[in-house]
Image (cartoon, rainbow over all chains, first blue to last red):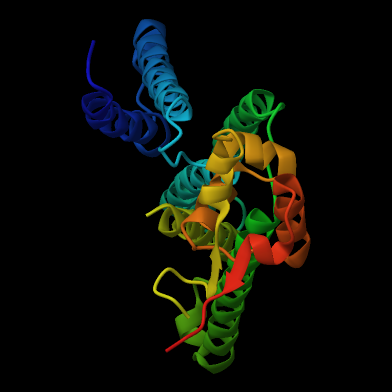
Length: 213
Length: 74
């Protein structure tokens, strides 16, 4: 059987590639067998990565000396992965959501559907983990302290971004704001919101990681 | 502040072993915290709230000062 480290080395790049092929590359008609193979392959890679993660966690649980990730830390890393995926996808596709006249492009619905798919996959993953943690303490005062600190970072980050955008709109000449159609501003606001969430998960993850090392 | 992050020392590891080699998970369950918080406490990377300090002391049947001490600087 392949070593866990080697499995991660193979599966993590494949998972990123699967995400890139499914969500970022322009739609290519591969016919139903090709489409099914790509979709099935992507799900298989993600499933194998999930199984490997669970096996690593189970092995660490048997060892009292090993400091495995707490439920709060696992939630943070999973949240970071999903928000990063959503942010990258949104940032890459945001331009296609704006029609030449500045209104909402027809592609916006399909892009929104893909984001909804990612959010549902995130919720399903969290539900599966909660089932696993149902007999253990999921959250305590240390988790609340780390979460509160991360919320502060997210609030500062979002405030800084909003302040920068406000200054840009207030002081830029009108001819340099031709891009600022309602749909483009809508995308900017959404990206700021997802970005602040990403910052919050990153701060939580790093705080837990530093505590374990 | 100590290099480990908190000026409070504790004897949790010693007390666990004196109480039938209690596992970190058993102590965590008894106090209603995660095992990772016990690990952080033992490593001196987290200073507990007063309530948690009392709960830990209660599990070991000692006073709070029997578990936690202020680390004098200098």
